[in-house]
Image 1 (cartoon, rainbow, N blue to C red):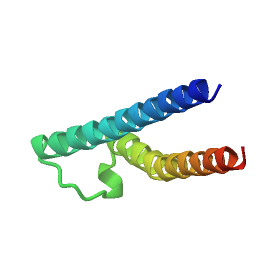
Image 2: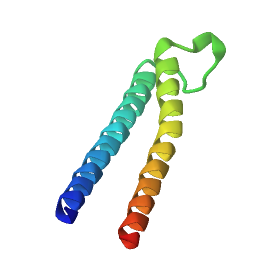
Image 3: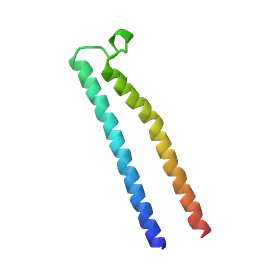
Length: 91
């Protein structure tokens, strides 16, 4: 029973890590594409209201969501690990 539980935790941790890495790579690729696109089109990186494009809005939204979701995800993972460690000590 304990062995099955530890395997389940290992798989869950691996899945969480892979999801985290995938999200980080996605955000990094979007930012890189945005920077390359901005420099290729000779538009300065300043967000002047007359020059805000759809791409600027999408990248900004992804960065905001990532900035909120990533710490929440890490905190949740940490809290669940703490709860499981407490349960294991009590048993």
